[in-house]
Every structure is written in C-alpha cells, then in structure tokens.
Image 1: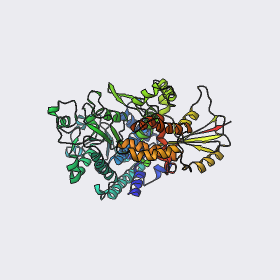
Image 2: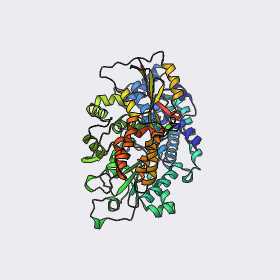
Image 3: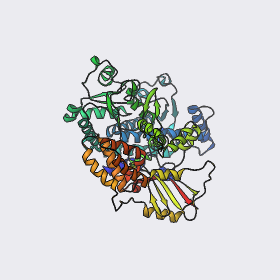
Image 4: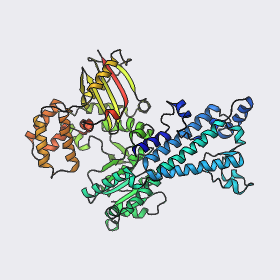
Length: 584
C-alpha cells in the first residue's frame, strides 16, 4: 500500500512542477491536467497562428489579455485542480476514486467532442453536459451556458503536443483507476485507525459525544456507510451524518446542542459525521471530541469547527479533545494549506499562546499555555520564560504586512549571525511536527528555552552569508544530532517514576501522558538544571495531586514539544525549514 500511495502521489501531485518543470512536462508518467489549460497549447509558429490565437485569448479573458496572462491563468486552474485531487486523495480512498472516475468521464466526453465536432468548449463557471451538444444541433448553447466559448477547428488551432498530452492524461487516469479498483475499506489504514480510536474514545468516556469533520461530502458518505456496515461500531456509536443535502438539522440539534431545553434533548445518536456546512451556525457542545479527518483548504475552518463545541454559554466539559489526521509527509509538499498556513501562522499562535477569538467575543480556544496556568504565573514573582516571547508576538500580531512576510518566506533559508560562540541551528518539519536542534560549541541542545534565546535577534541586527566554516558545522551537526539518554538518573526522575505508579488511578489519561512525557524529557536531558531542581522541590513541598499541579507550573506544554521526537527517526524523515550559523 505504501508503494502504491507514493507512486500515485508522484503521478498526480504538481508540487515539483516549478522546480522541475522541464522534467515534469516531458515525463509521460505525470498527470499534467491539460484539460484545464488548452490555451497554453495554442499554435504560435506563424504570424497567422499568433493572430488567431490572440483572438481566442481575448475572447476568453477579455480585450486586455495577452498570451502571458492566458498561460498564467490556465496553469493556475490546472494546478488548483491537481491540488484538489491530492486533497481528496488524502481525505479518503472513496473520495479519490470518485474523483478519478469523474475525471475519466470528462476527458472521454471532451475527446468525443473534439473527434466528433472538431470543437473544444471552454466554460469557466462549472461543468457542461456534453450530451446537449449532440442532441440538438440547432440549440443556442450560450443561453444555457452563459460565458461559454467554443474553440472551432481545434485540430488546426491547438498544437500536436496538446493532443498527445491529453491522451497521456487519460491513460494515466485509467491506470490509476485500475490500480485502486480492488482497494476497499478493509485495506484502508486511515479508516482502520479511525475505528481503533473511536472504540477507545467511547470506552474512556461514555458521555463525550464525538464529531468527525471532513471538507468532502464523498468522504462523509464513505465514513458513515463504512461505520454503519460494521455491526460493532454501529451499535456502539449510533452514527448520524450531516451534509449540505441533509434534511436532519433538527435531529442534529436534538442530539448535540446542549442549549436546547433538556426535555427536548435526545440521545439517539452518539457520533456525528459532517461536512463544514454544519459548523456554520449549529451548536454541538454536547460533544467533547472533534476528529478532523482531513485538513480543510481554509485553515480557519478548523477554528470554526472547534467553535461549534466550545461554547461559553453551556459548557459540559472542562477540556475538549481535538484529533487531526495530518497529511502524510509526501503530500505535505503539495497540500500547502497545512505546510504554509498552519505552520507559519497558526503555529506561531500556538507557540506564543495566542487565544484565538472565533465568531463571538466569548468564544476562546485555549492556548498551549492555559488561562489557568497563565493566571498562576502572573501571581508568582518568577514569570515563565516564554512570557517575553509572547509579549513580542502580541506587539507584532497586528502588523499584517509583517505576518504576510513570514507567511511568504521560502523554506530552506540559511543565514549567518554574529554571536559569542560558533554553532549551527536547524529547524525542521517532520511527520510528527516541528523540531529544532542547536549545535553550540560542539554540544547539541534541544531545550526550547535555550533555542528561543538564541533565535532572538536585535531590532537592528544584520544577517550575513554563511561563512567558510558552515560546511564543517553541518558535518558536526549531522554526527551529533541524535538525542541520547542520560547515564545517571537524577532524584527527580526516580520520584516521578514512583509517583506515576501511585497516582495513576486518580488522574486523567492526559495527565498520565503528561507525566510520562516529563519522565522521557528528563531521560533525554530536555530540561534545564533549575527545572530539575524545582521538580524535586515540588515533591518536598506538596502532596498527592498538588505535586502534579506544582510540576505543571514548572514544565509547561511548550517545554515538552521536542520530547515526542526523542528516540525516533524524525531527522531522517524531515524537511528543512531554516538554518542559522553563528560565529564570533
């Protein structure tokens, strides 16, 4: 399955088109989407060719349009449609297979149209029913399809390359259809993982209803039908689906809206599977778990989804759990909504703890640093180390031009900076998220606080080109980057291991996982010496659950971000975001 996935993505993904255009355009195994960009293939060999082609471009795009504009617009449409295909591929097998079948049908209809009438229709407002053009020769098609343009004598107007590429696209689509025709729900690893998680969620909390969101109706249909066919899941979860076509709004409200009068509330359904149309205007706060089965093109949709169950007026749960199916690493190269929008903007908010307002003023999505923890910090004499960086961000977040600059930064930046040491810092994106490593005076450091201190730049600080030592530093970084366990266990680690066994029956699953991360962080030397000493003090000065509360004031979520990557192959399966070299 992994090879089939990779081979298919290689065929449909346009992510490398700009970097490897010559190879991509000449590779017969790549789907080019020429159906969406016929004007790129207009003949321009002779002056007469250019005249006719220019007339077509102006007829389609307006009097001011030229060949460059037509090429750019056509390429953008083609690329968008291929991005959409990749997104549906990442969403579900069913949505992808349906898209492939639809595309084959459209290509075959156009082929029939070109061969039968020597015409090529260009319609920018949706799909055409090609039967209209064969049933009534005298019909005025422009009445039904306003804005339709038909290229006449298409075989004389478009180059030979267009027809060859068109046929090649069709053959690739048919090949993909054949490759996937016997792949059903029983081989769908993503759905099998969903089944496993749904059973676990239900077992952990009988009262937390669950919502699964997808941006595609086909995926919602697929999930609903697959769960209904599974007798165990169907009986356990009693699923309900909602799409734009559904007529069950009142049923959804009765089963998932906590603001409804109790006498009108129902418990017929425990699981809701829905498109984003439902997240616009329906309260769903009887649910305590959201599963984003795919990441929407517009990342603010995720915020709106959460807003449906995070309502101040009638909160049933102190915490809500949000689970995301993240696109595979290969697809993240293509699905820019996750790679760019989520990483470069949403991630900044997450790191600095920005509370995002959604829909109404009283609706908060709590940040990595919870409101409760922040209040405790402000009451202390010693403020948390990250307050400084949060304040910096709060000053900058209103500067839209600045944020846009960050959003548009290219990956792989490598600059030099003057510091009081020789070293190198790398920030990478992998399947588990973001990880940074700092090589300082030949010693590796993954501590978030230390890295932020090094990253901080003065307002007038200048950047330089990497020095002649950069290559040597890169070699050192490569040799030293693997995280190693410490040899001797400090008292804090021994205390935590005993504490976990004693307190495990009195705390939630998330708190148990938190303690396990702290233990792992100490094992891999992720915390500073003062933090380790403070943990030991927490055990001396507190009892039972108060110990955990004290530790949370010492080690916040932002302190344990890197712990997930200890003892993994993260670096080998990651992409470079930025490098900085430091020299004296």
